[in-house]
Image (cartoon, rainbow, N blue to C red):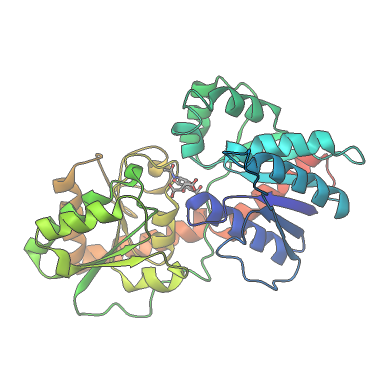
Length: 368
Ligand code: GMT
C-alpha cells in the first residue's frame, strides 16, 4: 500500500511509534510517506521506500499563530494526489486528525480514508481540555478508523468523548532484534535508568526520591535520559537530597537500544501512562521496569513476574522493589528473563505490525 503517516517528529512516544511503524511497513514492502514539519528523529534518510515531505508554515505579520493545521492539510492533500496514497494514518489526534479530514475532503480524484491513532495525552489531558474537546470528538468520529495503544485508552476515549464507533486496540511494539539484553551483566556499580520527556505527568522527581532510598542498600547510579520542563526541578532536588553525584542527566538521546542495556532497572513513576513504551523497550533489553499502577501499564507489566507495579507517588514501595531486584541475583535473573520473553512473545514487531496491516486492509476496503 501507499500510506501517508503524520506524527510529531520530536522526542515522545507517539512520534517514536509512528516512525518505527513506518520503517517496519517499508521493510515489508509498503511505500511510506511521512508528512510533518521536520524529519522524524528516528528516521534514517535514504531508507528504501521511505519518503519525507516537509510541511512549511509561512508566517505573516497578521498571524499571531501561524496556521500549521491548514498547511499540514494542504500538504497531505498534495502528497495524496501526487503519490496516489491509499490512506493516511495520523498519530496523536490534535491537530493531525482534523487536518486529515480536511485533506480527505480536498482530495476529489480518489477515496482517501484516514486512521487516527490515539496515544494518551491527546485524550487524557489535551483532548479533554474544554477548548479542544469538541474538535477532538468530531475528528475521532469522522475518522475512517480509530486505534488506541491500550484497552484502558479505548475505554477512556469512549467514556470521555462518548464515542460509540468501534475502536481497535493495537498495543505499542518493540523491535526485539534491535533492543536486546547485553551479553553479560557487569558486577560493578548498579544502574537505574529513566527515559521520558520530563513533563509533569512523568513525575520525574520521584526518580530522585527513589534513588535516595535505594542508595541505603549500596552504591547505585541513575541515568536520566530526555529533557523537558521538569529537568531543572529534578537537578535542584538531587542537590537538596545530596544525591547529585549519583545521577547523570544525559539530555535527549537518539539510540535508546544502546543505552538501556547498560542499566539494571528502569523507573517509570508516571502519574498516567496510556501504555508505557519506555517500559516495553526496557523489557526487550531484559531490564525489568518498576512502574506505577496507572492507565494501561498493567496491560504491559505483570506484577512480580516481568516487572513491578506500585501506587503513584508511593516512593517507599517502588524503592523496595528496586532494592529487591538489585540485591537478589536469582530474583533479578528470573524477572529479567520474563521481561524479555513478554516483549518477544506479546509485543514484538512481528506480531503487532500485521495487526496494523489487517486494519489498513479493512479500512481501505481490501486493497492491501
Ligand atoms: O508521554 C509521552 O512519552 C509522550 C506521549 C506521546 O503521545 O507522544 O506518549 C504516549 O504515547 C506512547 C506511545 O503510544 C505511550 O506508550 C505513552 O504511554 C503515552 N504517554 C502517556 O499516556 C502519558
